[in-house]
Length: 487
Ligand code: NAD
Image 1: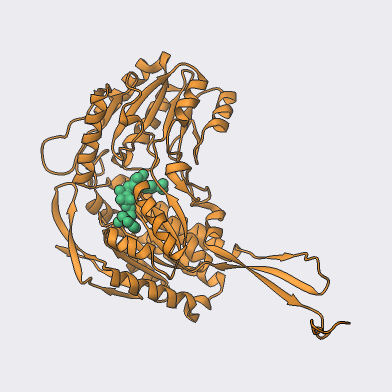
Image 2: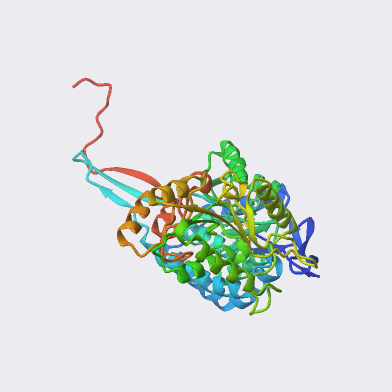
């Protein structure tokens, strides 16, 4: 079996404890992962704190930090095939997706490399003649980055890129499910030449996450995962009063009006919900379709869903692979069962297939006559599309916003004016019009409500990892008068 190590203070080490990682395509153990204890987490945070305050990192110019990030970007690009194969093996995400996504991850590091020396302070026109006052933008400190199993190289890049550009140091905790690609990525961090302790990477479960998030030397917690875990983290942050940025789940509306290009919309919907086997925070998991085109649109979707090539994730021709964990598959099957009991009707899929591996077929659930079906409210995080219909634009908007989440949304229409009205009305961090799932390092990303707060991507994300220091400098050579002597 393959073995992976933690990366703490510039050194690779076996954990005291370990666990076996399962290949989701077979259900068999294929590698041994180290499991971080609270003591390992403490050593990693102490190393990050020393690096934050030490001259090897704190003494670098912003441009020098940028150069390290450029080097990391090049290494990620060169190692993309290896990292993609590992992510596919350990999480079941199909190779076509991991290959394309990891190659693009390099662009995130490049974007933040370029930003490192553009994070500027300010000079204030202060209302006192003998004072100079300016603001220094300084790194906030040690960042705890906690990520889930899906798209973890990507979800780490949107945290490490801006945090390192700003001058912070990081302890990154990979999910206990599928941590191999991040533990391997640590080798690139070392090769790029970041000083020891600047980036530490370990894995482990909730105990390790909790120890990290509540550590007194952590200043900012950048978390991606589920809302329940986020609530634990926010409660825990009462210990260290660390800032939090939370990228959580979604139940994103995918809205199709009768005037839309239905073939385009169907293609976008199929990739919007079945890509990454539905394990995507932005999955367009709630189809809101105008009643007059429901039958036509659903028959296109059904044909496409049934034609999807399900198979081993390491084959280029595979379009939908297994889920990451058996636990996840059981949860999805249970949510479908509760929804059909509430009146939802299966259009296609829905049954756990025979055989090895954690597979689940593309599934469409018609909830038009079951407005209370849990499938409309709860996140599946799997390849399941829930469908409802609407008659009017107002109704579409009402349904779109009838959710505790608020991450992404899609609107398909040929009407420019309607598109603008929908853009204004939808409560979500992203609105895609006549497209879906497009992302870029230049564009901020994040949500409202149970989808979290804070934005990743773009310039603002780098500023989130900074704090402002106000400097007052007296320019007068006159002695400061004794305040207790009356003049
Ligand atoms: P999760 O919340 O169970 O786990 C996420 C991470 O938190 C893991 O590393 C886990 O070990 C850690 N963790 C667990 N308990 C913890 C605790 N008490 N304290 C600190 N850390 C703890 O999420 P998951 O099931 O692995 O991932 C799926 C969720 O992530 C979905 O809800 C999905 O929508 C969301 N997600 C969001 C985005 C986004 O950018 N908005 C992207 C991908 C996934």
